[in-house]
Length: 101
Length: 168
Image 1 (tube, rainbow over the protein chains, first blue to last red):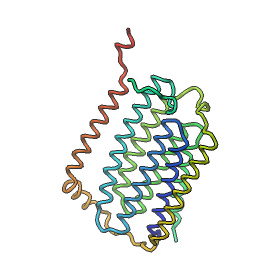
Image 2 (cartoon, each protein chain N blue to C red):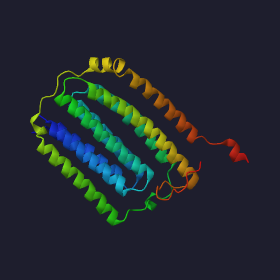
Image 3 (cartoon, each protein chain N blue to C red):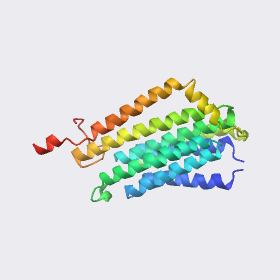
Image 4 (cartoon, rainbow over the protein chains, first blue to last red):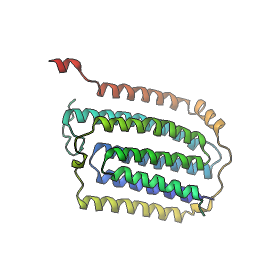
């Protein structure tokens, strides 16, 4: 049987990979990948703790809300990436220096 | 004491995450990210939470991954190899931070003896989720609907091509 520690440790590894990506990568799309990985690590933590330690469904409900929020956030970030590419022909965040639309 | 399904899904999830960040072609990175999200959905099934797993597959693997793939194709440059490879000092700093984080979290997991709890709750929780969403958390659901609508309108406004600008 799996224990709670296995799931929580897997979630910690995913979060560490996300932090590595946020520090190292410069492309906006890679940064979005890293953020998505970190959000998934947090969701996994929520469901794991809820299913092992509690006897209700609050964790699952919170994760449903979190997934919907992450989808909205991804849509906005991708629109910003498309606009940045149209203006600068580049998605490197260290080269984007203007905010004018 | 972990079973084979968990180990294979762990490999899919972590390997997909690493490939998503490190693949040379960003298209392959997007596909690997979809695989990683699918692995997380399988872990939700293992955790006896099929509703969340189905939601994850529908929204993440179905919508977000396809959205990312289309954006990657729209933003596709001639040479993705020109993506500036980070300096090795940055890479080392990132890897060190990641390892320190995982190490400290792993120490905390071992310290609080989370491995002792091995019994999943039996109910899949469909009824409880429905009661919570339509009861105590109904205001959050309404606000979430507003946020989704605002984000869709914002994304459309941002990415709209101005025809009049083009003609002048």
